[in-house]
Length: 107
Length: 122
Image 1: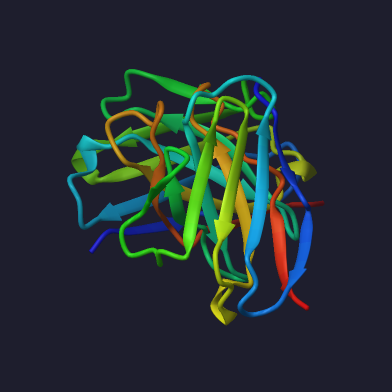
Image 2 (image 1 turned 45 degrees about the vertical axis):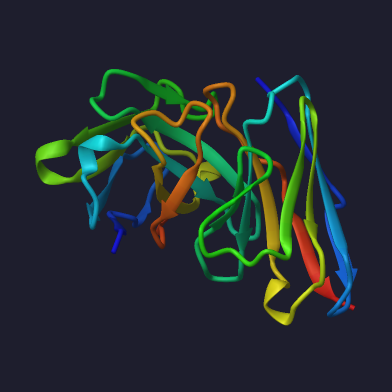
């Protein structure tokens, strides 16, 4: 199985900050890496697919990059509604597992 | 509008069985693969199982393999998860998720339901 490891597990930031979250796969997954945002009591929401493609309706301040084993999710200018937990997911091997999550909190 | 509505969650004793359902609407159900993802209280997301568009391919997490069975009824626009030999560690909110194509291989989950809660406890 592929292991997905996110860092950091939690992050404190302020509105307007540039934020970067990292996801590392235990083996190459090409660019088959997705990012989801989850707010408390809500279902996850797709932000980025195929490492860098922005899902329709997602603000352009969200961006993704990477390939192989190392990936990043970047929020260029943090907004109040962005405080949430973020998960990466691989869909290269059929157990489509997720990273453990990164909780983004207000500083 | 795509809607996924899970049902069937309940409080159940260890060793017992439960069947979850996910009713889909707003899209052509048999054009897409479907998956189940769970989230234990206060924890992260755990992929559980998936099925392709025509039930020709299924997959399971090691943690549920041999105990859970995924199925779908395209005529009823419904996805199911039969859960047997339930354990305390199966306690979670169970989400159904729609894939972006007939298979989720190299794809993504573009819509999620709101989840149904399964609690396994004596």
